[in-house]
Length: 135
Image (cartoon, rainbow, N blue to C red; front, side, top):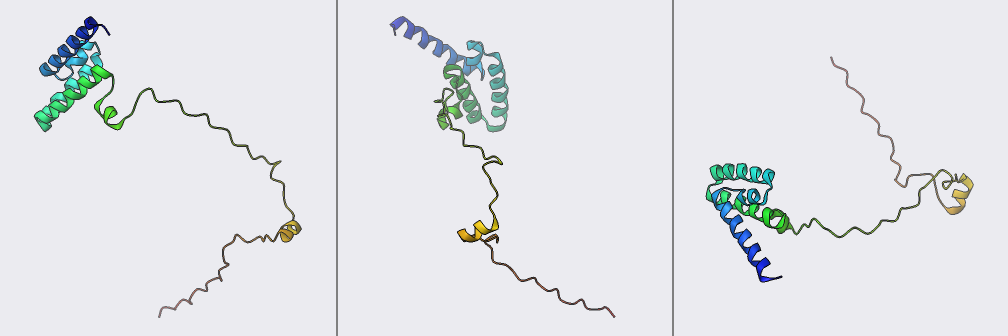
């Protein structure tokens, strides 16, 4: 980059930081993103009322981050990126149709050693205790 471009970018960043000092969302306002500026201004006032100066500082930092990098702070912390690598194509598994599932006779099952039970041990039916008659 040329020194003029670096100087212009540095000046723009400085103006955006000064905008955040005046009002949360000021950097987005300078950038021209009025929706984000309004959201951050409202959140900044609420954060100042509820959390004090640390809340205001956090909202202002998030606003500046969004204005400079188009990513919120949580996106920087989590490592999430907007331009993620495309996922590898997934091969479709073959579909099971009624033609592939042919019925097996009971004789073929006996030859193969398969039984009709579900594999669970059969339980004997429980007998209920006799009801006592009320007097």
